[in-house]
Length: 337
Ligand code: DAH
Image (tube, rainbow, N blue to C red; front, top):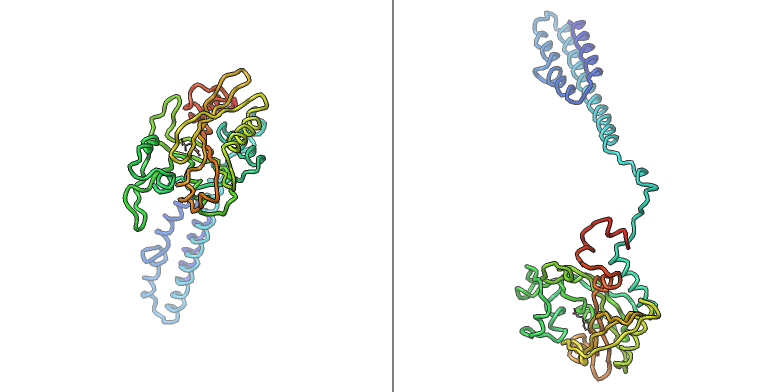
């Protein structure tokens, strides 16, 4: 009996050691281990032994054999799992050195380049970079900018609304910001003047893409609040920016216009050295109602603001015909800039 048990154990251990895969170990487990396994069958034969001592010894041997087989199964399973993992890692390995020395190296996108250079130029002029959220309240995006509910100028910004009702708020008052101007309000509420900030960022409008429009694009906002700021400071800043960003042969002009958040308001254009004018953005003296919404006393503080499209400026600067090209992810286009 004992020799049968030893033989069965040896055979089982040899099979386990030779199992080539995890699936084979599963099959062996059913065959060798548990109540219906080969060793369990030997246990049933214990009853046929006459002497109690023989039964005890054989019973012990079967139990030891079963334990040894279970341990061997577990060890082989762990071993094979490791081998399979190693071969999977090997199969999925990416050889990153493949890309070294290819003729094109990555670089920042055209719009990112413009964004970063704009920041650099304004920081050079003494501005700080500020930011605000892309998902805004109606209040920050419109109302605090002197556009109460129902104000006709709201129609200028085709607005995307977010299906979110703030705690204690009204439905339909959460928007994707249609411009970077709400950062003016957030900055005034957060810090004490003097304020000299620019706020570049993503903005959203309910527009169908065409050669000159994208529903997602970028703007940069400027805000200055100090004592005794005048329209001359605005004009001087725009001119200094124009020459620093575009080059010494470029100049700027202001044209009377209307925006609810500035009074007076002006659009500003940039003149190329060849004499052509490019319309760039809007600007003006911060409206007293906007100062009040920002928690500032218009009798003490005055300021100017401006805002323009980063994508549009990059488009003009590089003579790009269709603004959609900038977002088409065509490497042949992107590589040119
Ligand atoms: N927010 C305006 C727009 O999206 C641009 C603008 C105009 C910003 C005048 C200003 C400003 O700060 O003073 O069309």
